[in-house]
Image (cartoon, rainbow, N blue to C red; front, side, top):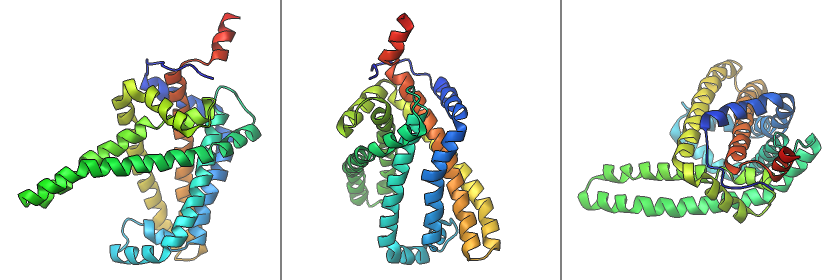
Length: 282
């Protein structure tokens, strides 16, 4: 059990501490990220050959839309399984670098145990996003219709984007709470995450937004470069394997960093554990 209400958040310290946690546990994190992030991504490319075409930036939108309609069933099924794997993987990585110093087997058990709770959190997040998006965009749509200016309705997308990033930031401690906070109750996890992130919500939102933008840019550049190599290999299994490995490797790297930062941020926001305080006075 940890104490709540540690408000002296230093994001520079969070970054450096997160990188240290990743560096100190790199070999084991690579194994976990490889199992839960790399292998499933490669499997998706090999099992759904058309998936590569769907994610290519230069693909014909009409063809993508047509193929998306044909593959929607398999994509939902495979995507659901992939999400379950990733939830377990992130949970295991956060557990591994947490203060309890579990074995890999214990971290894996923790990662699997938090999956049902994480699914509930994601469903509630989707519901909150849907309701919030409607509330935010409807006034702009009405105003655009009255004024005869469709551009006004488009502007309504901006507050929706800000809202979803804000909501993600406020709930970003939910998984660390489930893994390190001594609860598997998704409602408690969400409530605690809101409480911990509240005082520094805008700084945390900006921090995660910048991080996600950086990951996206780096991933696009790396995958774009590897995509050229994959294109030279044609459309066979080798090309799919190269593209899958490229996406999987970027997913591994970002996953390990996010896990380290999430654990470091929770550590700083929640304050020292009761055990740590006890050790200090003994």
